[in-house]
Length: 146
Image (tube, rainbow, N blue to C red; front, side, top):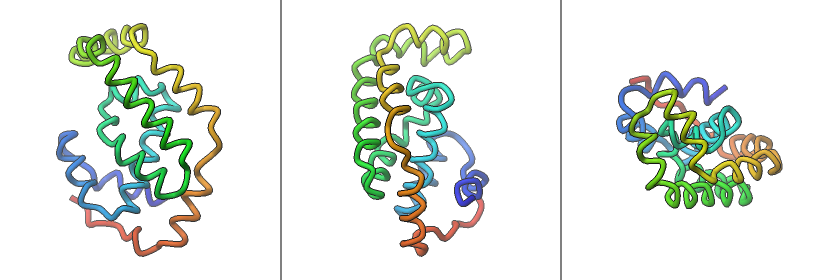
């Protein structure tokens, strides 16, 4: 529920959204970044995560998974970042076009799908995140809407 309360507090360009979330507590940043990566990867894989520019929060997702003690998920996101940069010279063209056609075509030019499989097979992290929230309620005070 807290995650959904954050959505209206993030507005503007992707850079403005990022700046907003960086002003939040570590707990809220963890919640935002870990939920964002989970939603994107479960919807369309890591390729979608980076294509939609949600990958801008990848470092926060890695830190967030480490914060809640879910190291395997942190390692998968780190591997996805590494693969994204390895594929970037080829993907750049498709990502810059930013059309439905270029999005579909980009899947043919990346190895990110192997990390999707690791993501889907990894243990669930939601309980660890919920336990962290319950132990640190002071980190989850909502910021005012923008």
